[in-house]
Structure formats: C-alpha cells, structure tokens
Image (cartoon, rainbow, N blue to C red; front, side, top):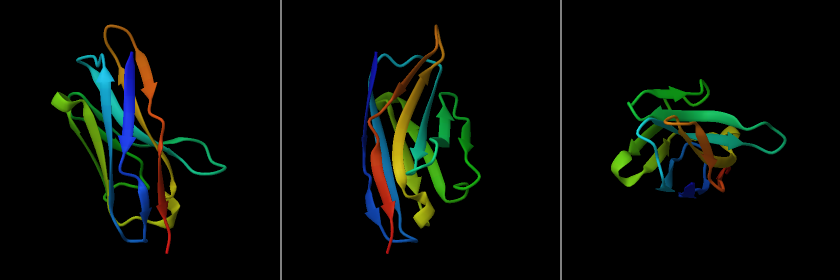
Length: 118
C-alpha cells in the first residue's frame, strides 16, 4: 500500500510561482511513474506532468515551459514547480503514483488547492 501526502498549494497572483510537493510512504516499486493531475470545477481531471523512475518526463501542452516536474527517489518525493501561473491553472492538484512492477498499482493523494487570481 502507498500513501501520498501533498503540500505547498495556496493562493498566488497571476504571473507568480508555487511549488507543490508529494511525499510517498509505503512500497514504491523500482519501476514507477510519479505525476501530478489537476481538476478544475466542472472539468475532468487531467494530467499536468509525470516523471518516470528512469527520468523521462511528460507535460501537458498547456503547462510546458512554465512547469517543471522533478523527483527525489531516495525521499520518495515528487515536486512540481509552477511558474508564470495563470488563472486557468486554478484547480485541485492531485499527486499520483503508479507502480509498474511486479504488478500495476495506482495511488492518489488527497489533493491540494492552487488558486491563481488577482
């Protein structure tokens, strides 16, 4: 079982920056993907960014060049640095971990609110 605890959300003005963190506890497999999703009111949950255990990253086109995902595997922690934030980035941000070996397992954090407004 894996538990995820997010932190670092909050309110920021447009153009500002925030960093959210997600600390995992429990059994993380050697081959895994850690990522961030977000869900705005009335919208579906969408992938923001992910990073595989080998280092490969994926970004939604809407955040590319503004957001950076990173991980500290020793600490079982994934980070999302968000720069040049826009009002449309307002959402609940959820951490996700997928264990890929020996069997697949997916886990979600409880979410952290990010609000971008003036």
